[in-house]
Length: 376
Ligand SMILES: [Zn+2]
Image (cartoon, rainbow, N blue to C red; front, side, top):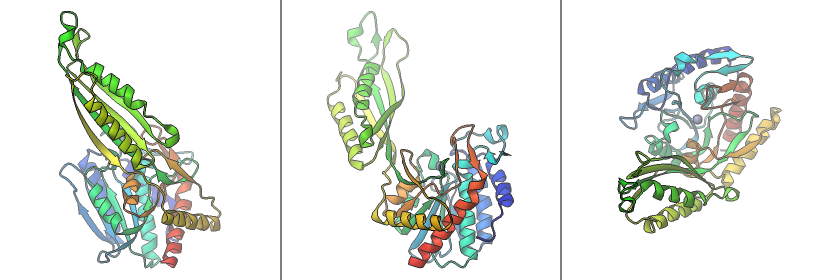
């Protein structure tokens, strides 16, 4: 890659990090999209911009061959962050001791920028592959609005590079667990806890028994975990609770494990401890597991070889955290993830990105695409 210059990258990163773009901040995502739309157009690429829903921020679909049916390489990244409005003003971008700080610097404004530099290098080098860069603004809320679009692109794509952050020690991600969030709502009957407790049907008691039953399904060795992250209900101590609600985050290595959890919820619904309590359950934020296929392993070997020729040791990890890589891999694409620059402490005030990981990882990604191109 010839045209890369870190000071220019850092300057652009500062601009992007100092714009609040939480998942609910449409204007913020639009401003990030403006920045990239202008740059990609200058490269002569086709830029399609749209809103997947009136509630969501912009999506960008950037193509070098917009008329070709198939996409050789799909590069994805999200423009939203988990931080509320005002964070960028409170915690401005800064560089200290080779690390860049600021909201979303690692997850994943640096990754967006790296995708741009990769696309620019491919374009400038006259690469013949067909690529698409896809950016959404709702990844941190499970891509609820953009997932159909992402999955649709993935269906036409052969390889997926996800520019989520690289791990602190440089590892890439080849495997992610699936996830789903269960929301359980309990409606019982209120009554005076002293005068007529027997007339009440406690939503809180029912909920607590469900939680105990469900978290007993935790099976770490099988890769299954359930976490009742929120639970609330009742009004005062001396009233039998009429209402309670909890959310249970579930992670699983294979879809069959999710089916087991669904079956357990169904069984509990049919055999409620107190039949007077009504229970409603719903699932949101579903992402299928990202498990490597034969083609993924081939892609991993290629990246390892390219890394070796550049003097880099390529290491892989599997993680319980989800990304749009889950959605893309589910369509049969060979996906590798965490290709963005490295750092740590995502989603916290201490988030940082390590500056000297930017260029080597870009170079690796670029050379890997060139090697792929030679095999296509
Ligand atoms: Zn992310």
